[in-house]
Image (cartoon, rainbow, N blue to C red; front, side):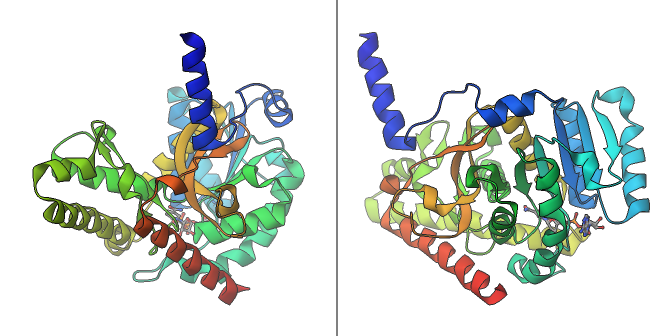
Length: 354
Ligand code: NAD
């Protein structure tokens, strides 16, 4: 009886993920554990401090190091965070040089310019790519076993660049990607249904930006597939239209969300800080959660030749991306087209930038 279950589980694992290595010591994980857990945040602006604050409240590292080129601003942010020392147990330091970031388990990059009202994320590429030349090599020099987590925009293209500049294996260079967009989608849908966000499962995939798309086949509410709900409510043709209209309407709100918040308060920071805190916790605790984050598309069977980074459902652990959920066989043809469009949008901007 048990062996039947074991065989079925092994077969399922192989089909969904390929072979997920067991959560045991690997050289990177063992080395990272031999030091106190140090996390570095590069860029102490609005996003950097939101990430830092979220990480502090999670009590997941022994030391948090902040880096910024503006020394007074850095000192002020670090002092302000340190003054909450009675309420968390992490040591907080301002780095005087990259040497102070040595042996970081995770390096989070939030440095760079942000969108002005109406500006798209892809338009930031040239300005932020130039900054990465002075950030990625020294980070990796002092933390050769780190996981690089890129947050600066355009996050997918900059994750690709960070991977090229770092020389790290691709599973150790990730971006926050559409984890934030997925939270926005789940929250907005849950609000409409009058239920808690945790009871809505959904992933936005592709570019963190205008060409993102919803993995519609995977939306569930309380475990019930949303598409099936619509099919039970009415005839097939109206069900399909109503389902698409709802998903499209909520997704449009997701795509507009950052533009709207930027118009109102000048920048976004708290939600991305929460997404980054969740990603870092998953890494530090080797949780192996499946998260929609930026990774190399070539990890997906069927997309091996696509040299582009974008969000796919990744199994995340202490060594970075352990596996990618092999999602292609479960996608409808229109979802595959959406994925292809997102790949093309990113490739075309990468070409213009190079
Ligand atoms: P900000 O202007 O408040 O902060 C940027 C900080 O980077 C500044 O303090 C600046 O001094 C610092 N910096 C610049 N060059 C540096 C360098 N070479 N080394 C170290 N520090 C440097 O901007 P912000 O609102 O914090 O946004 C930061 C980035 O995050 C932007 O690119 C923005 O588009 C992006 N962002 C991404 C997401 C996401 O979901 N991925 C969400 C929100 C914002």
